[in-house]
Image (cartoon, rainbow, N blue to C red; front, top):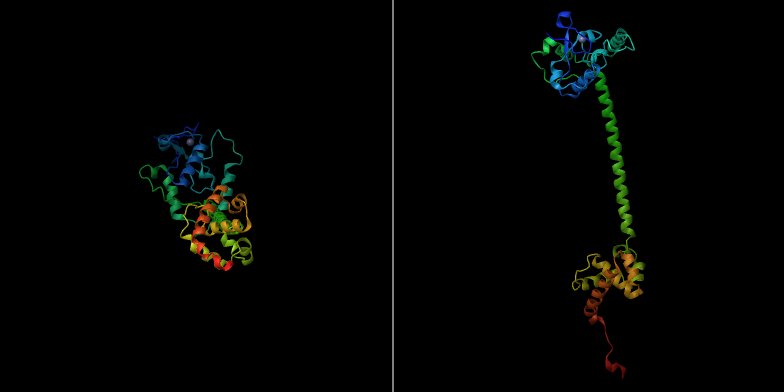
Length: 285
Ligand SMILES: [Zn+2]
């Protein structure tokens, strides 16, 4: 014969009261309801086995029935001898019923499943068979809360997408700026005057020279592309720039400048030698 598990309540089946199981199931709705019940009856420390056996009598519900509607005062047991009531229980129930009437719309109330679940709470029904845990109707308030959260998340998502788009284009711009600020052949060649100033050559001759020398240069200086290596060498020859100056401009070490210079000069002296036309000895006499 079940006895009520609430502190200081000695109600038994013989007292003419109904008994309700403490909500079970893994659905968030059921978990939350169980948590609220255990808090209300001051049994938050109970384990699952004890919860399964425990029963709460109808004397702890204002209407005498447990409710599955989260906005109902009977969603959680609330009448206890040890608890002072801030509002009289009947006022709470009347307010809830007025609200329910206002909210009631045929399309929003899953009436049949609600009734099923309400029945499911009584001891007669659930003692023998367990209903499927996933089939849990969601209260109107919870539905509204979820809609609100969904709406907020959608807004956040759109804002984040916009931020992401903005950051991407900013990143692209910064990359372009960084590329432009580098001292390189691809930047210098965009101005004919600048290329002439630094090398004394036009871009056509520069590229012909590069093609002629490139095959003979050992690819040992990965720090710079070949075209930038040639630019560096030509700048040193024409302007007499120091290795430190060139290292700073091309973002390499001075020893790299020195190595590049030495390997290019030796190749240039061999490859370009036939281009030097010395006057004949006879022409002086
Ligand atoms: Zn009781």
